[in-house]
Image (cartoon, rainbow, N blue to C red; front, side, top):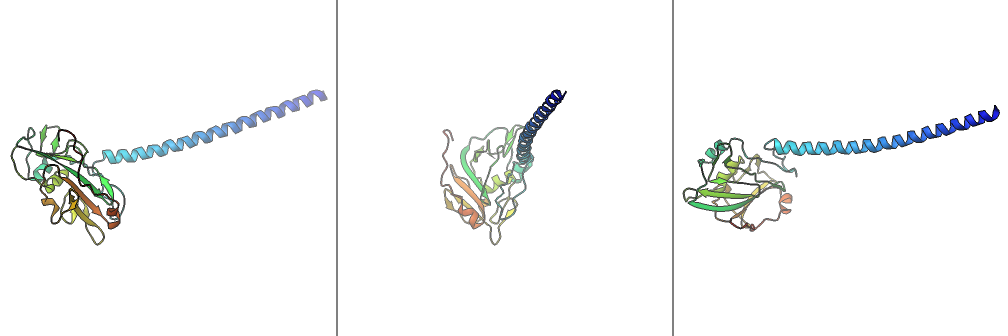
Length: 227
């Protein structure tokens, strides 16, 4: 009986050791799982934020002096925006005047995307003489008449008002300036009156001196074949 008792005790100890080892292994698996879950949750939060910006229309402007980028989407009411710019929608792209300019925009040191489909009503299949097809920053001027078109008209179509003291909701003050460059050279006067010429490289820069010092102002744009 004594021998049997010793064997039973040894079996119990072995079983206890097995259970403890299994519990430790289970704890390790749980920690790994929880850690991975936290990463998934964090990644999901980031995706959610990005999706909210991408699909929520125009984002709010960054606060003065911040490095937060802005996302100014094309207006949902294209016809009203084009009318506000003093232009009319066409049933086809004009051919009397056909030129292109390239537009870059920086706000508080951050590059801001010029959106696709500015001046284009896809539902009605109509188009403004000033419009964009994609997010490259290329502005198409395709007009049925030969006339001057200017930066202010395009910015109005975009829904981002422009003057010598304002870019969208951002305004100049003691520390924030608004500068506009054409082919690498700073312009003067009201930038909204800047007339488009074929293959102009236009850069709009709003921000502090520190923000602006980080930006390399382009003097030209590499145009794809056909443009």
